[in-house]
Length: 384
Image (tube, rainbow, N blue to C red; front, side, top):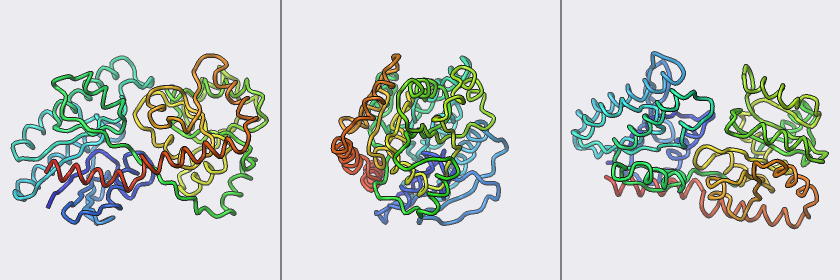
């Protein structure tokens, strides 16, 4: 039996979040009976339960926020050490999601390796580059990344660009690396029309008469550029922005700098956690606009390619790698996105349908969850 401990997500059942959705699919689609998943979850009741055939265990953490995530991983690694001492015959792998465990991993790595536990990691998407961090925090997160990568035996990267970065940045200190993408689902939404229409009525939105943005409301996702450029465009459609701006300092700053509230087309609609509803909202959008600049393979982008006919992506390596010829691209130069929006208003239906087929096929061929979960199982078998 190969025991794989998944550490670093908030746990399953997944309610939101990229890592959580990944773990949900990885466990639900497991095929090999010789692999057993163990999933740590952030919850205070500290009980064990089975979900998707995985052994799930809640871990109480003493802190909230980022400190809590770090403490959670540390506590779980200590539990893995104890478990391995009692299960010496197990072929044990620890898969750490994200880099925040940082320096703590140096302590645990020595102990786990002595017990013949293999350490794999997913370095995520250059967290230290995010603009929300100050200079000291960026240096610390970069150091966390270094500690994670150099104390792991295998780095599994969900972007070819990230894999190249790891090898370039850490050279001989880099572990073995491999590329396995994040996934998406191309099945149509089962959302009830009544639920969708209630949501549309709430925000005065019309099917196929809106551009859509979905993602965290942070500066590096280029909301300011997207909003400014849309305001410059001649489109009569709405710009629907699905994100959480409650008590968000960046939102207040953007209100002052862009005065978007004076443009009736700009509609902030809050978050949508119901998966079938957000999928239906994507399907019915005229186009999706993607401005993410930091990170690897972004879940929102894959979901858009799987569901939305027309996708307008910021032209950077991460996005090109995923979209290739199935999407259109814009630069951050003044007029770049607004001119593309103006052009998109006059696209023939046949051209949009052609892009839709390409983007759907791109997901089916390279980013299907079933294929990705099979690749992970092959990795576990090979490493064990």
